[in-house]
Amino acid sequence: MTANEAVDARVRRRLRELRGEQGLTLQQVAERANIDVSTLSRLESGKRRLALDHLPGLAAALGVKADDLLGSAPPPDPRVRAKPLKMGAMTAWPLTSRGGAGGLQAFKLLVPFDGAEPPDELPVHEGHDWIYVLSGRLRLVLGEKDFVIEPGEAVEFSTWTPHWFGAVDGPVELIGIFGPQGQRLHVHG
Image 1: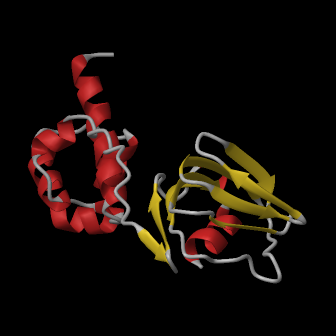
Image 2: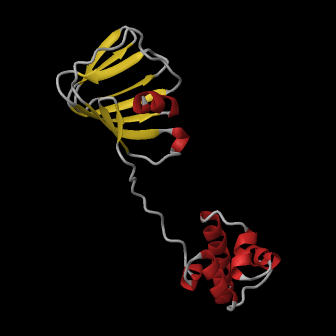
Image 3: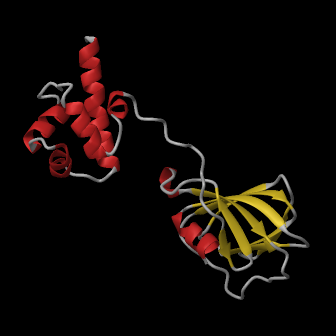
């Protein structure tokens, strides 16, 4: 592979990436770049060689510099920057972005001590929950059993088992991993 072929392949890839990121069609970019849509399609697919005079128009059509078409895509920012969620008295900080593996979402939760008691009918739903207590003491009711989970302890359970959790004698910080069903119940409601 020659240096020109490598540049050509890189520009084709960046054209597709930038067009996709911006949700633009071939037609829209072609009109903005003042080239024929079939020419743009052939450029992207590699059926036509890229000419240097195409770069300024394509870059302008995508709102980037020509250098952005010649380089690699910058790596995405890996930090999760979601805002905390309030659910009644609890606060949840998302630790994963939406669409995690298998729909699983991780949260740091602050469960305040508010004297809450489990409801008469404990919730049941599809899924599996995993909880790790960072600080405080967590009361976990699973079916007929009542547990106190201490800092440094983890629990995991099927959410088909009736369940509820709350703070024992002070605020509790925990990390929780919930599937989509548990996330809706624990984090959104």
